Image 1: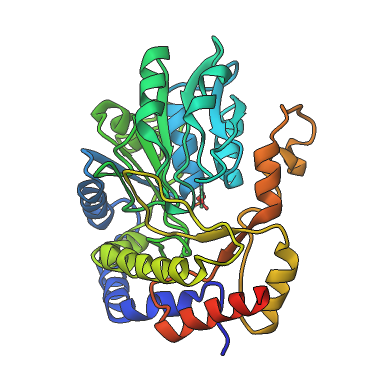
Image 2: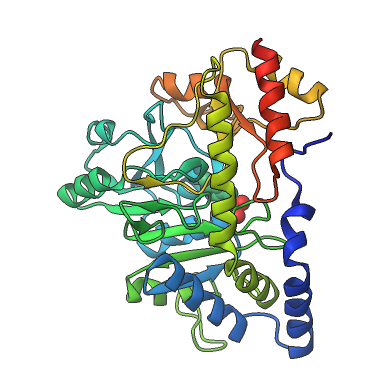
Length: 364
Ligand SMILES: *Cc1c(COP(=O)(O)O)cnc(C)c1O
């Protein structure tokens, strides 16, 4: 049996008819950018996240970057980010011209440790950008409290956490604004790139609608130095169809995660930690081990695909080689120890059992 780390054809197979209908509808409409379908998706995704506003954009990196631009965060400003995240979180800040200030995660959750945030705040700090990594919501209450106390914005990087809940509330509405990605491998994935910004701030949303579209709200009149970063009609139509099944698919992921956790409970692996009040959506199921390379090779030899999220911590990336960083021992340890098991809504019980059996064999 071969079990891919992630098979996107299998992810989209249950949506085959709905996706083909969506493609037909858009092809026949003759309207492909910024139309009814994107507006409808924006309304539906805002409602799903429990926020007032959603602005579709071209990808997750742009979503985060445009939020910073809309808040006029740039040169001379600092943004607090987790040391352990996908590079996009950092690049969104760098591309705005602001300085990245990394804060270490809680090693159990892999998410930013709120207790370490205040020590990183300076007079230049403008925002905190927590990431709901691997689909586990970050500990938002203390983060929002610190932000309020210091007059900072809270920008969620929710690219891995569509539908996750923190104390009963969905990601996307847990701070001032949130960036989502619809990259094909995310829990809600398009057939190409896509992204969105969620917020309850109508004025911010209005500014973002201009910034994503050449700084314009009236055709050929340009009020600001905007970008071309739009979610197109085709992806919007596909995302509308897939959004209807997102909760069911996240529930399937939770079943897979629970099966992994039960089967591996007595192994030497450190399993994902779910904090109190958190309802994760299992974008990834990430274990920690000190002999990752051997375990990965063992699984690979049996046809089981795994990946590492992420093998090079952001501060170790060549793109940031010319900057000096504080010691970030937790990010360094995580880059060497994390291993992501196959995770998708389509995994059946025999596939789950094949993964856990192979893992237990390795430790036997
Ligand atoms: C995928 C991802 C992004 C960026 O999304 P793109 O659509 O690929 O630009 C940002 N942050 C995190 C944590 C991600 O996983």
